[in-house]
Length: 348
Image (tube, rainbow, N blue to C red):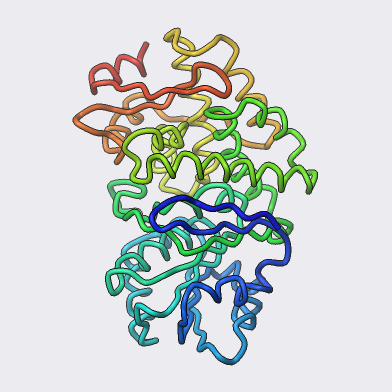
């Protein structure tokens, strides 16, 4: 088992290895003398891992669980209200513990509920998808979607611990596994060129664990320097501005988050190459790796639709669009554009 420490305030551990879910109770016992644990999961993960997590606490701790429907549609105000009602029914206190057991939807929704119920209850992330393990479970971004866009309502609220059990990835469909590969490609593009070629070997279990650990090391470095996403941390949004637009255009149903990010990375790099801001041939490398990981690289969306949706992006500051562009594989920069300049950039 590998252990990383995320140096936020307060700092917290990330455990990476096998058979962690079975040992959840012992791994989190040092977080406090809590009387009850409430687990939030979805209807896919429930039948695979919920009982194992509950059993790990033995009889000394009261446990309860709530199951939400899987999918992005559950990351909404209605689901948030259901969690508040559930926590109230269970008489949760600030000295108790909430566990998010599932992928990014469960993690984002549960984290936001934990941050706001009683003005903050400790929670633990147990990500069960590749995407959640390498990205969304770490760093403290919690959110729900509203009709205007993705992740527009949320908070920065760090978990007390993260358990990345590699064994859970063996139950993922090819589509959901590929979803996580998009975020891994993102890390290689923005931060570590040596990781890029390694991704082609991701189906080797030892390589997979090495890749997950490296992605989390990168995120730990970035988050420690910029916890609230006002500077360096913005680089983790490479591919996301256009990717979120693609997701919203198709009502969060046609394309998964990772597929949207893959399309976003290819589209934005194609544009930045055309503008002379990115080394020639970069987009070809990204597109080939995305296709090798069974990810889409394009979709039907007009520049007008991209412009309108991107202008609502929560990462925009002072009427400026903040794009993350590549100099080359492994090196990126923040490119600030006015709305007029962004329109020209799209339509060059």
